[in-house]
Length: 355
Image 1 (tube, rainbow, N blue to C red):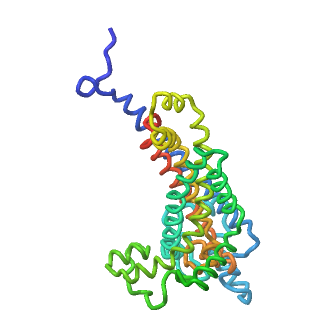
Image 2: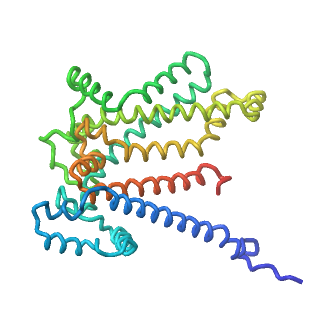
Image 3: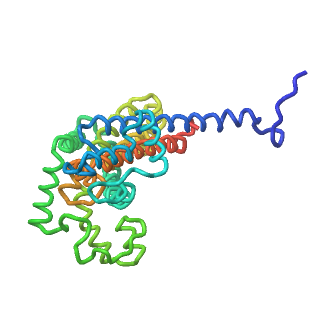
């Protein structure tokens, strides 16, 4: 007679079942993240070696002697085999060492920590705008397929995909700042308000509230609203289009017809049942949109003189500062990995079937 596995309280899961449910999936997830991260580092390493820019000359200058060049060449480890260079590179990145910026003469990691909160602030507000307006617009368009509401939403989305972001930003500055004077101009703050609020998080809206300085908060919000609206418009176009597509598929399902036949209100059918069933793919759409705004706001930051990660990478690229460029690329890649991990976690929260 076989003996059953020991269980807790007589009815719990066995140890092997717990391992299969939690430990093994966690191990697979960690292994997947490690392989993805190593792949990211390998790609950036190869890019750094293939770009026709001599990193030694960028440091010592073209007038340096051959002996100075050779000494720096050895100090940078460029005389070692490529596999040793890659191993050193991975070890340095794992320690948080992304090299030193030639442009600022500061560690790249410190520079990114300094500029990233500005991009985080801009992208987060833009994503909120895209979600708050994009999801309802997509739902309304799907419910009214072929009607004027659907056509309006599709035209708004088409303009969002078609208009260049730099042109939209310049037109926004011209109209709302230059002509109407409804918002503040480029930058994050007026010069008068700079360095008044002590940096805690690096996000001025949060830091000003923590300090209780509502004048700084108002000024920062006035600077933020226009670039965030420009980016939010592109996020809105993408989210509304995908929401419409997902909703059209759900509204044609049999369970929707059954709910309507049973007399369930149309609002409950649409906003509870149909929208609830598209939340899992919609989370992916929102996460990808957020990641794209975090790494793709280069033109917006340039137009609005927004001192964020996009502008930092652009200036580094124009100055052939490859340490800063590759360091920023690694951070962007890690953001995508992290947001994918977050969306996978939210799947399990939203949809019990994924647990």
